[in-house]
Image 1 (cartoon, rainbow, N blue to C red):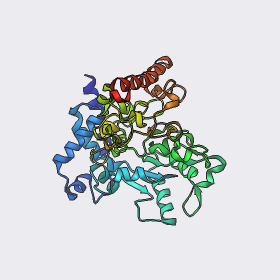
Image 2: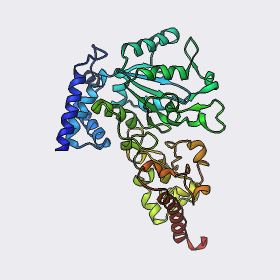
Image 3: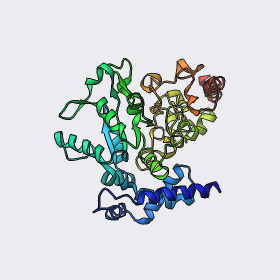
Image 4: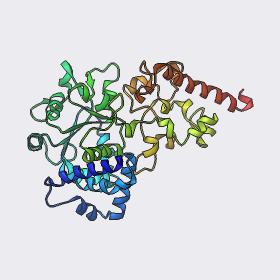
Length: 385
């Protein structure tokens, strides 16, 4: 019964969106995909995957496909702040653009400084026009940390020399939904690492409007697109954790679904890069993997068309979707030695689970370290004991 109600609610929502005029009358999503050689079968397979990722029943796949086809009704304004443009590259995947990037590159992006041809005064005019034309309707996506306070002059944009902070504030005021894309925009990122000379801040520290954080350095294209599709489907914010990250994407630890988890449980660890354990795919915890402390779906969704991710490639997770990871998770190729028997961020990384107490968090941190130490001792060759 609840499932039927939800299905009807989404159908009604999509029906309302269908009444809106598409931004580009000469090109629809269906025409675009056909032009790029993407079959209806492949499109539906993609929609089924997105449906599963958002933890919706498989019967909702037609609704997901319809939501993607209606994405050209909701314009996206994408702002660049202090960043490397890696988050944009994650979405676009210029080496092999897929359905995700085709939809939001060719159709939905109303303003994106890296992609659009306009520059200077014309670019500034385009941004102002997009904000005014789609006031209260556009989705705002911000990439990069934002210098704030007396240091905001470290980032200026456009011919007027407008600060990034001013740009972000103005665009936030009229947005229907706001997403901080990447760890820099979510939490400040490398720009905010000690001593943070530009006083870089995450977007949520700049605006008082609700911000959905989509951290990662960079986040996968599935997490970027999935959040847009969730908004198209429901018209509301998703369930968020303590750091305003969508639980459907950041509800589990990297460690929970890691393909090397069995090695961890068996006490089989890489002792140093390039050793026999590394060649056999042993657990990377002892060479710095922060998977047990990091919440993200990399181990399930992966990158580059689902082909691989850092741990599969042989390097441990560096915790890039966690706040202040540049300071809190280093050194990246060593275990968190100073936190083996205490918790991360005071209350522990597990605080984002929203459902466990501090005592249990302490036990979790101790348990990870103790398990690794005991298992490694049991599994050590005799000549090493």
